[in-house]
Image (tube, rainbow, N blue to C red):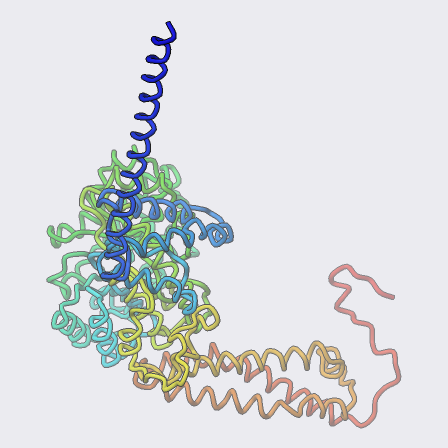
Length: 629
């Protein structure tokens, strides 16, 4: 029995010993394999300077897509402040991991430049995808209404944008087209001649730039309906903003506008018929019995028929804002998807705030394709005189993200993007940023849309396009500072692009305008001797009046000098009417205020004797129901 137990114990001991040896062998084998794998990785690091693409292509693409999804989620946040806080959704670890993926050279450059973007002040928008989205068409919008650039200057800008990547131009003539016949009253006295329009079109053809004319045909009809002869087509008798879609005279007007434009633009592929911001619709005695959206869709249908009767091959484009709140069933019932291509426009940074995902889904169910529209000027204030390039760049970069997301949802994808450059908010508004003040913003945003992103790798192309000298600095500095200098005055002060003198003058205007405002406010409101009350009653101390007017000549002559320099810098860019209008709107009001202060001070100082107080009771208070005494 003992012998059997010993034999059994011996077998158990041998089995345990064998299992231990087997476990040790497996562990050693695993350690060896890990060392071998590490050695291969180390070899690739030494050879390539970065990690080998051990991730499979599927894993690589999955990771890139996850980063893209993170950013799209951040972009859809309605609050811009929340968006900025959530930009850390793409964290440093993600960026480091991107560096470890063997990607195409352009993507590697983007990753390397990501941190540099913060130094340049470029908005933190993720544009480091393997294949950045590049719109097929990059169209630059020239808003000509009421202030036409000279043909020489316009051709310089057309050549410049072609070199940077533009594929076409959107020409919004409004009253600058040389209309004839019954439409002759519409043409402004400084409108282009037929020969000048032909020269523009021929030069665009030489540059292989697609030309898309834009005619307003519903809202923004002030340029035509302001005239007595066409006032009968107004929707609201006292307002020329929109025409009545149910009057024969309205369709006759549209037909003549379309025919005259198409007669000159005989080789175009697209025509933009406007139809945005129809503020007055369904208000006249004829239209108020119909549903507003039916009125709109019916009028678009009628305009499209007019266009096709003249040229059946032309594709018709409309602005999309009037479509956003129309139900998909009604759009489909009207068959509008076969009639027009919508141009979805948002000029703010948060695209999805204004065109939410359900609207995009509706558009993809109705239309085979669509356009988008960003802005490079004329979008952030009716009275601005230079664009905020940083805000416009973020608008364009956000659009690239949205287009990358939405393009595949359309059967034919997205056609392209239009960079709008509004010159007035409507026909009756004052001038906003003139074209020469916005050339740097245009080039910056056109580079971004042409390449699918913008970062430090475009330094040479950006500076060369604007004819900028390279700074001779011991310690190189970033070539842009959009965070601290969103107008780019500091960085582009010595550039020689077309219109550079006027661009530089805007910085001087900025300083003089602030100085004039501060002086007027200090003199007439904050101090106690040159207020409206002092002037009314001729009651002040001459000594104090002299003190308050010491700086007046310096500020005044600075404004006069600015006006002269503006006229000189604009003389080859726009006509004399535009120069006069710009000076009268921007500089002259301050000159008048200073002249009024000067005249009041002279009158106050002539007084040598003053009455005893109290001064007379202000009787005008009585008409407001304020009875005193």
